[in-house]
Length: 347
Image 1: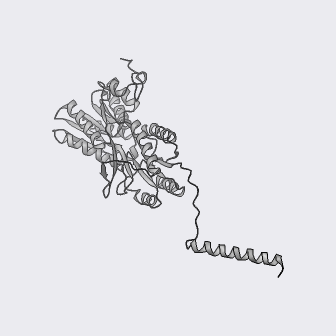
Image 2: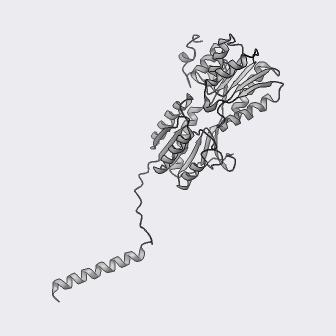
Image 3: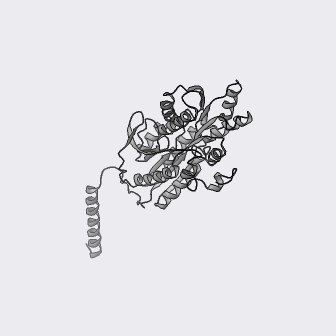
């Protein structure tokens, strides 16, 4: 055997031995080489729709804060369609995002898709609205029972212990509506006030405020107060009152502290709105989403029962806003004075 063949044989033996050693150490099955983790938290945000004014503000705040913390946010708008929202969440799962934040359309229809997300190791946050029986990683919202209590207390103080009212509530698929109703009834049931008529607004359609109020007024009756699911619904209820020359004569309450609602309050056509600290809500949610995406503990003590599971709960407190405390709570903080007093002149 010449020298060249000896060298070739030696190299072959070395290569064979090396492969045998590697095969002894390698796990059975396919070897998966993980992609390099760049440390960026990817967040999917699925929004019900932009029918409600506040969601655009909160989207912008959430995205800005998350990006400030180094995260990337993919925003999807479901336009009020639950099937679209499910497909959006499935898309986020396919993209293997770290966290999915959901403003749910229907509290009962997202259980399966949330379960799929969690099985893939994706963390899920229910933003503002609980997703029932889904065991989300975080539920962050304003205290909706307290929202209802504030509405009830205002009406009770305004009309006394007697009188009749009508309710034009929000969407029947939004569990927040049930919680607001629970708080509202806990106050009204301590009086002799009667709820003469109550109706839901499918998909939070604000125009239902006009139709329901007009229909009720056509019977010849005038309510002492109208409890509306939000300020958009209240705007249409007030429109119906104005057309019947009853503007400012019926106490109307709503929630969200929309700019137009604040204008109506200082003008005297709407009595009260409930301000929910949505700016703080959006910023807190972004911070918590990034923590979850990084695998950091949230450190929350409070929980909320979603019907099956006790889930971590971050609760913010709402505030009743009237003409008397408008400047203290809203002016210069949530809306500008020149905008609030646009139609009446600044104080």
